[in-house]
View 1 (cartoon, rainbow, N blue to C red):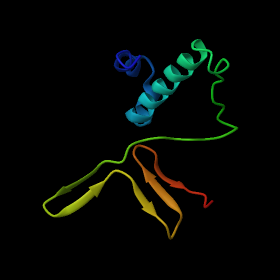
View 2 (cartoon, one colour; view 1 turned 90 degrees about the horizontal axis):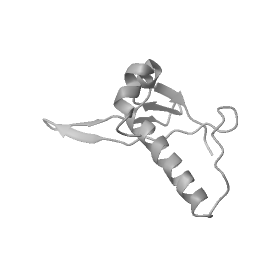
View 3 (cartoon, rainbow, N blue to C red; view 1 turned 180 degrees about the horizontal axis):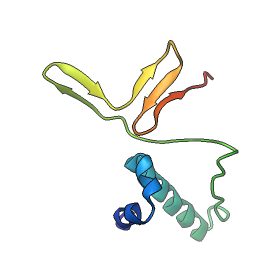
Length: 95
């Protein structure tokens, strides 16, 4: 499905609104769920419901250029916000 992801961007333009790494993680999670089911390690998988639990996984890319540090994810502890790629600032909940 990772190979078909490029074609799906043209067919479903809403896929461009989220991070490409998170889409690949979703594909890998689906593959793992099917593999566990066929190997009799778990029951048939259940798709996530956006009302039960909202989760998001991405990677943090850090680099430095001319002595300045850059990162695609920024954490603001004072305002309890996380800045994520393509999503912008998101309120975080302290556990």
